[in-house]
Image 1: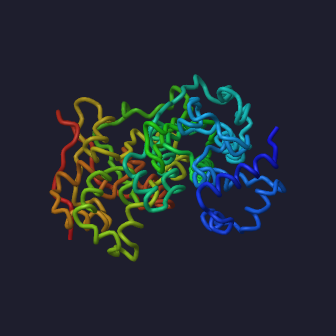
Image 2: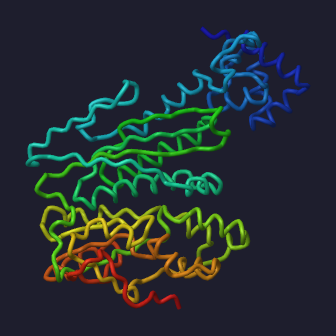
Length: 416
């Protein structure tokens, strides 16, 4: 059991070794000097919120503070390698509030070795699991740098959900992984909170995951996110493009910007022209524009699933329309895309102009405003457009014809 008197003496001795007064230590921790005095007198323990910072200031480990003594410097320990089990355990306990769910299929919470999820679906004939893993790319580096910690979590989950709904799946459960050089409690809590909220927005559950602290791999302050999702669909309802026919219409549902692709190019542009960060585009700064969360398309398409009116869908990510729509076009058919029909947001125009980027490069790198493509029977075109328009601007950009090439572009994008 921790001894408050012993802990207090240890804090006082380490403070004096560093030549700090109680007031100076309090200022470094943003607490009152009375709080420091109470710690040193053994009246109270340091709050968990300040414990890690206190250890950093005193140049000891959290375990050392709680034990009231510094371990032999010659003895190797996990805490000396940069990981305090006591501290990380408290972080995990605080995560549990964000894993609470009303989903009756989630059979356990934080603590067990793995998550349990009930996959009995009596209302789905021949249920098929749809699985996907994803990470938000270099956008997450900008997110941490500019304070968009929770926002990047929505990017991560929305991207995952979009990738499975294009196959007709209903999202069920997400498992996340947070890899970091040093687990800062507030940052980790913010990430888990953001992922949990994004899951709820997409009608699925965050059921567990992993926080991996790797001080010898990543620098302190660096976070790498990744996650996996499971969805469900009846085997006969899978949307894979095989139903696409000559004469079908190709529709575009608008994006809100870059989503999670093209950020290596954008960061290069920002390094070359740092002044653009605060330039205004449609009333928002460049940073605010590029950090908008990836659009979630599930709310817009969920009531269209299972009705045999969506012959194919493509989530437009890296590779653009050509690199993604081609995945669902059957052999012998061509999607003829009219580039002049695409409604390009001003953000893409600005990037193209500042970087002197060719149209071909823009189309390969970005979604250019068409974040989701839908292939539908021409007889259902107006029904689908009307439905999607309740959520996102939706319009026709092409037609399915016979041909040996999966994608053909005609005309050019209107960049003016």
